[in-house]
Image 1 (tube, rainbow, N blue to C red):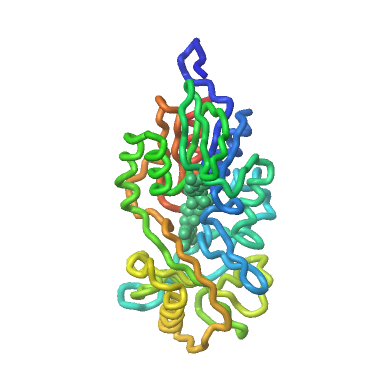
Image 2 (cartoon, rainbow, N blue to C red):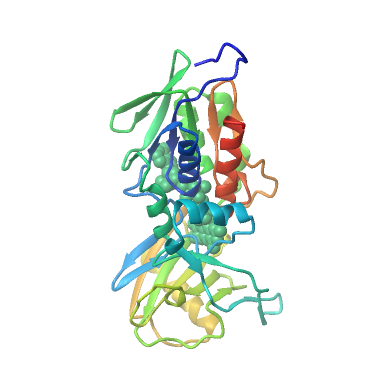
Length: 338
Ligand SMILES: Cc1cc2nc3c(=O)[nH]c(=O)nc-3n(C[C@H](O)[C@H](O)[C@H](O)COP(=O)(O)OP(=O)(O)OC[C@H]3O[C@@H](n4cnc5c(N)ncnc54)[C@H](O)[C@@H]3O)c2cc1C
C-alpha cells in the first residue's frame, strides 16, 4: 500500500459510502484518474438528498429544490459527466418574505434543476459507476493497512486502499464508533449538533393556483419554503404539484408527530402564506432527519492520512448541492495531487 520512494500511500482501490452528489462526484473524479471505485448505498437507488418522490402523474423534488453553479468547474463537471440534457435552468420567479412580512424578489441568479426530475443528474452520474445499492455499511475493518467493509446483512466487501464516507455526520459518526475509530467519531460531535431535520410535503392541485412566485422563502411559524414543482422545466404535470418545507425548529418539535397531522398543519400554513383557500387534491409527505447543516465554518473535506479515510459531503462545505461537489472535488485533489 505504501510507495517506498515517497511514503505516500498508493491508492488503487477506493470504497465510497453513499451515492449522493458527493459520493458520485468522488467516484467520477477518481475513476478519471484510473482508481477502481466501489460505491455502497443504503437506499434503493443513488441520489441521496437530491431526490424525487413518485407522485400520481409524475414526481416531485422533495429534497433539494434547485442548485447554484457559482463555480464554473461545477457546471463543466455536470456537462461532462451527467450530460447537458439532464439539467437546466429553472426560469421561475423567486421571492422571500422580509421581516415585516412583505414579499420581495430575490436577485436574479441561475437556479438549476434536474430534468425531468432532480434524480436525472445522479442517475446519469451513476450510470458508469459500480454501485451496490440497498447495502448499509455498518463497520470498517482494518486489515494489514487495507479496509474491508461489513454491511448490515453480514456481507463483506474489499479490500480497499482507502475509504471515503459521504454520509451525513450522525451516520458517519455511528459508522466510526462501530469500527473502533473512536477519535474520528468524537471529531464529529460538533457537526452532528448542527444538522437539522425537515418535514417536506408535496401537495397537488388539479386546478392550477395563481401565485406571484414559483419559489417562495417564507417567514412562517411552520413553513420555510414553498415551490411550484410543476413550473420546473421538463415536468409534464396535469394540474400543479407544490412542494412545502417546514422550518427546522418546527420540524424538530414535530419530529415524532404523525405524517397526517404534520401535513394537515403544513397545508394550513400553505394557505396562510399564499392566501389560497383551496384544499389540495392529494398530499404526500417525507421526514428528513438529516436535512441540512447549519454550521458556518466548514473545512471543505477531511482526510485522515494515518487511516486513509476521507470525509466529503455538503455538511463540510456550506450545506448545499454545490458544496457537496466542492467537498468531493477537494478531497480527490488532496488524495491524488497532480
Ligand atoms: C428538504 C431539503 C431541501 C434542500 N434544498 C436545497 C436547495 O434548494 N439547494 C441546495 O443546494 N441544497 C438543498 N438541500 C441540500 C442538498 O440536498 C444537499 O446539500 C446535497 O444533496 C448533499 O449531497 P451529499 O452527497 O453530501 O449527501 P447525501 O445526498 O445525503 O448523500 C449521502 C448518501 O449516503 C447514504 N448513506 C448514509 N449512510 C450510509 C451507510 N452507512 N451505508 C451506505 N450508504 C449510506 C445515504 O442514503 C445517502 O444516499 C436540501 C436538502 C433537503 C433535505
